Length: 258
Image (cartoon, rainbow, N blue to C red; front, side, top):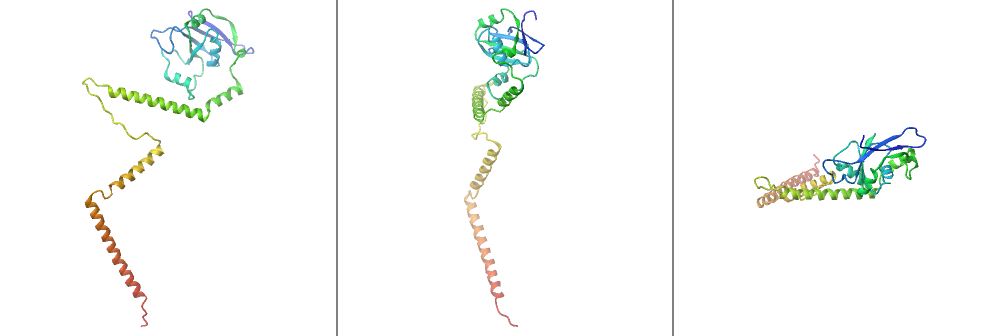
C-alpha cells in the first residue's frame, strides 16, 4: 500500500469505527477505453454503504466525474453487464461486502488533483449533502427502484430489442460476407416468419395446417372425378334406404282385423 493515498470515512458522529479507502492512479499494461489510465482513479477497500452517489460526492470535489464502476475485484476491462446495469432498469445485485471502484474523470487535471495528497481529515458521511440512506428511507428507495413505472419499463424493453436486432443484423451481414480458406461463402437460411410468443406461434401453426389441408383437397382432376362418383353413390344408397323406410311405414299403417 505504499503507492496508495488514503481517505478516512466514518458513517456518523455516533459511530466509533472508521474505514480507510485507499486510492491511486489507475495503471494497466493494456489500455482500456472505458477506464483510461490518464483519467481513472483506482480505489480499494470501499465499504458497502459507499454507493455510487456517495463516491461521486467524495471524489467529485477534485473535478467532474463521467463514470463510476464498482466491482468485486480488479479487472483489466469493464464487463458489459456492469455498463448495462448502469444504464438500464434491470440491475444485478451488487457484491455484499467491501468492493473496489474505478472513478473516471472528465479531464486529466482532475485526476492529478485527486492523487496530489492524502485526505488527512475524517469525513463524516452523515454530514454530506446527500447522506447514505438507512432504515425506512433505504427500504422505500429499494422498493421504488425494483418496481419502475410500466411506461419506463416498456420503453427500456423496446430499446433493448431494437439494439439486439441491430446487433443480430450486423452479425449476419458480417458472417454472410466472410469466406473460408478455400473461398467458399456460407449461405444460411432465413425464415420469412417472425419469432412470436408461444401462444401466437401455436395459433399461426394451426392456421397454416388448416390452410394446407384446404388447399390439398381435390387438387388433381382424377380426384375431383372420384369425389363426384363417391358423392353420387352415397346419394343413391341413401335414396334406396329412404324407399325401404317409406315402404315399412306404409305397411305398419295398414288395418289388419285378422
